[in-house]
Length: 116
Image (cartoon, rainbow, N blue to C red; front, side, top):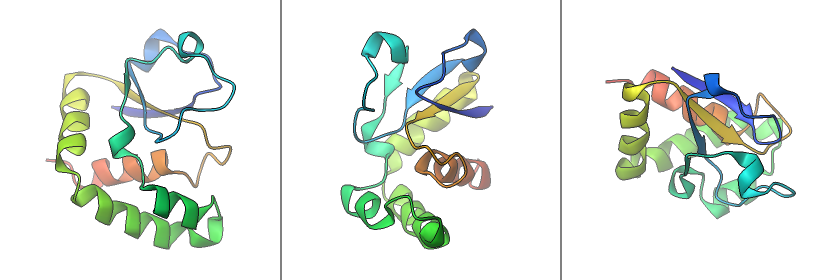
């Protein structure tokens, strides 16, 4: 099962494997406080796509489409995430304030819809 959680929320044993799915390290968070098992930068949207999106909900559908296209070209990182999910609970940790329109949501949707 894939769960989503902001990096600013406290870690919980129920999170399972905690994976930071951001290209940049979140502001104001120490590595100790983040309590991550893995930082998978390469699965995050490209810098160009992230900059274009700029967390604008009006661009959400186009962002998801473009990001999913990037994910289809990123087989190694996607395969690594699929393997973690097969082993147990995984929490995608992200920094965005918007809990509905962010790359972690799009990534979870991608994996849920293209499940083996």
